[in-house]
Length: 372
Image 1 (cartoon, helix red, strand yellow):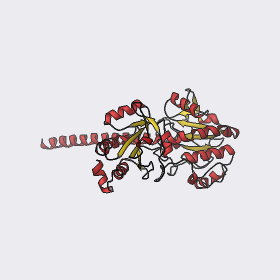
Image 2 (cartoon, rainbow, N blue to C red):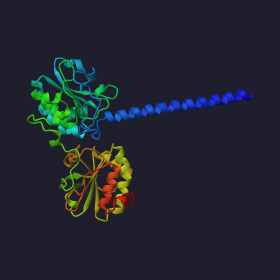
Image 3 (spheres, rainbow, N blue to C red):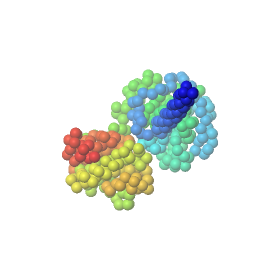
Image 4 (tube, rainbow, N blue to C red):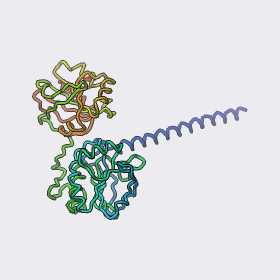
């Protein structure tokens, strides 16, 4: 009887252990799926400069076949472009770098067409907002909607924008282009019929002397934020109550200018620290201004949720972010009393808190205690 009871206990323990392991496996699988979606979402935080290495397709490899709906709901397959070269761009209008080069791609479209190159954007979201953005930027090329289940495998773990140039048979004709500068350079080479620089790899691309194509080191796209000593770009934007807020009216005070997004998780983590910063230091010469993205209602909801009492202005898309040279969130600039940037940009919660410590005169070791 004792042996039977012991066996029953062991069996129960084993069944509980098995159930726990099975549940844990499901959790890990779910986390993997979430992580994959985060990478695919195309945030500018991924690798906008194109400097991150990836598992790219080699030259002459066939790009995997796909069938995706266009903005009118028609199903388009890669094979439908057979006989043309295809500049296939992984795209997202929510990505500041994509928005920044959209007009350039639109301007190149006619040159690409003359060279029998079809520009195709594989984008995210719904048809209507994508159509609206395409019209705004002058893009008339096919735009196909992708999601996690249908994303072509070469793009499944990539940010945006990235691109492949395919030949008439759907084979990779030039090295993978990663980041805004490389995508535009690849498009310009394709539009002029000069893609030889790509054959030697991305470093050759960076040194290209093709007229109109500048290497990454000379890029006009600032991606790492304006540097210390640079005059802070002026702005005049509406706050959540509709009152216009300008940087000029803060002349004579230090300003911590924080770029945020109501859909940004790290921004939510930073939020209570900003509240305490404002409560402790708003009267000692340090002003806090938060620049939000999206619409006023989203930002108003976040302000109420976190109890923000400092000015919150809403920028149009990434317009002000572009002027300050960085599209990520959360980031912050410390601006001196004379309107000049006092420190290099701070990226992420900890760096922003350390920068705020500089703004209130705290040492690096004291920053977290005094702010938090």
